[in-house]
Length: 163
Image (cartoon, rainbow, N blue to C red; front, side, top):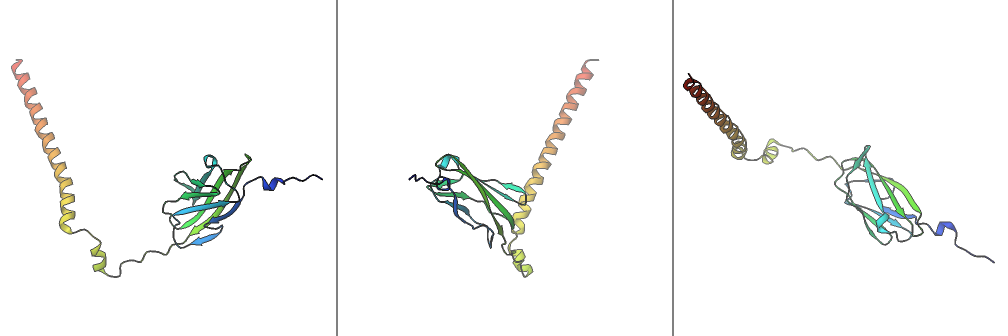
């Protein structure tokens, strides 16, 4: 009698994820966690996230045995696809994807003018910041005018002495 493990036992497979496939989240997840049915080599684990057709810039994932963790930057509301690729212990690639949406509630607008004014910097600070920028421009213009006048006088004097 011949007994052997079937090919399904030789390959890693996704056992679970956080967020789960199809989940609607009320906030952006700080990480995506992929759990496999066997340890995966860290050097062959890749994760990519796209949202609204655009790739999300990600650091390299971390692998701890059968768990692949991907740090995720703050995501805006929308639909996202997490595509993964790992290599089984037997060398076969395993790919797949999970989908989730971020549906964070809209941020409430300030209810009064005083609340909106509280978020603004003091007028003196705003004036001094904008004033310093225009002061620099003024000094550059003055310096350029002085240099231009000096060059004009030197050229005029040198032409006058040539006669």
